[in-house]
Length: 186
Image (tube, rainbow, N blue to C red; front, side, top):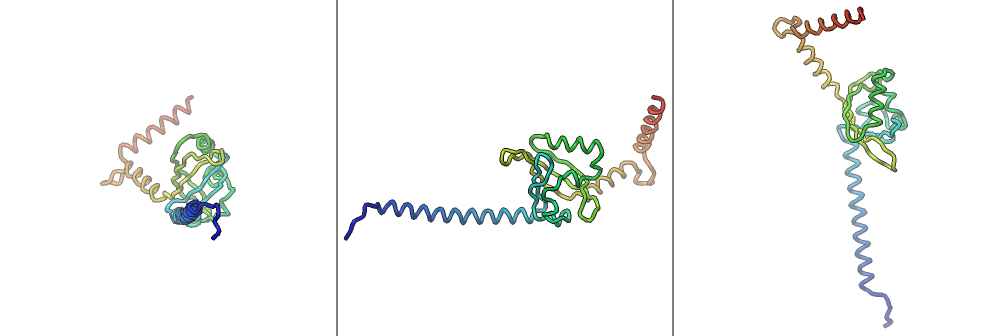
């Protein structure tokens, strides 16, 4: 019987390590599959925006939330979907988003693929990828929330019993008249 200089224990250790690595690869693959399923079936749409506002990643559920296919959103600028994007106030807010650190919540009306505009709540957090700062954003349709808010606002100006405007509405009208007069004389 010929003896080899190889240590059988070393071979066994290498064999066990390769088994563990194979199990680790399987666990990693399973974990990635689960994560992908969570992202694809989430109630919120996820997207990653670079510092210039261009979309670099968007979750597949963008079709059910905004009507667009992934390819229709990738490399597009988020700013192009915002209603009234040419107003100075919108530009200021967009600049603040590019400059913020940490997390921020915004509510914007964004264009759906069918051309209509809907309210979306957007939670953004800072994310660094390849040494470039990006924004990880969760997007959710909040049309119903906005409708309830408007209904509450209207109810606050109208007497529930008579249906007539109340003192709060009167004060609001009076304030507008005063502002117009001040503008007229100044």
